[in-house]
Image (cartoon, rainbow, N blue to C red; front, side):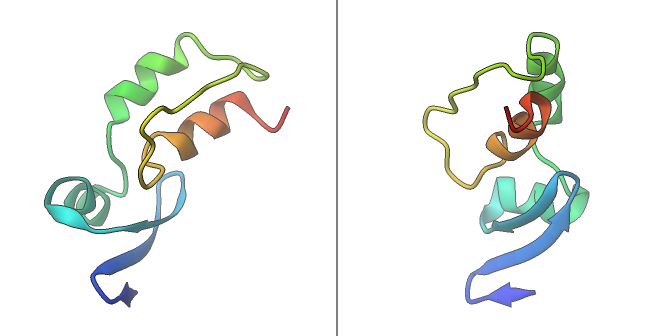
Length: 72
């Protein structure tokens, strides 16, 4: 679904609103972005951990990391 230059798509970790030639293209083609980073950080994070995504933009890391650490 398009919203002007932005696309909305249900991706691997949930709904993402994106645009752009790199991150946007990855979400459009594969439904994910930075999967290796998420796997690597998942080795150090557990439910209840605290994560700060400095420089967060569209949530490409924030959304999957929030799912790793849970609601608490």
